[in-house]
Amino acid sequence: MIKSVFDLEVFNLAYSFAMEIFQATRNFPKEERYSLTDQIVRASRSVAANIAEGRGKRIYENEFKKHLIYGMGSLEESKVWLLFAKDCGYLEIQTYQTLSAKSDLLGSKIYKLYENWKTF
Image (cartoon, rainbow, N blue to C red; front, side, top):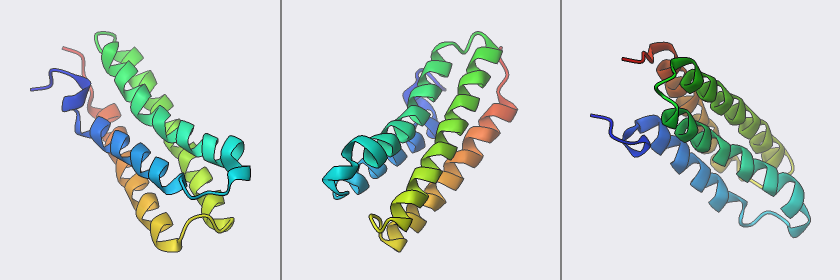
C-alpha cells in the first residue's frame, strides 16, 4: 500500500540517482561549480522533487501525470549534463555508464507509472 511518496519505488530510485550524481560531482573542478556541477545536481534533484510534488497532487490525475512529465524532462536534462561531464573528462567512463544505465531504468519506470496511473 502506498501511504507516502517514500513508498513509491520510482521516487526512491530518483532520489538515489540524484544522490549518486551529487557524490560523482564532488571532484569536478572548482571552475565548474556554478555551471556544470550546479546544473547536473539541480536537474537530477528535480526528478525526485517533481515525482513528490505530483504525488502530493495525485487526486488530480492530470496534475500528477504532468509532474511525471516534468520529471522525465529533468531526467533527460540530467543525461545531457552527464554526457558533458564525461566528454570534459570529469567522469570516468565506468561511472558515466553506470549512471546512464540507472537513468534509463528510472526513465522507463517513470514512463510506466505515467502510462498506468489512474486516480481512484
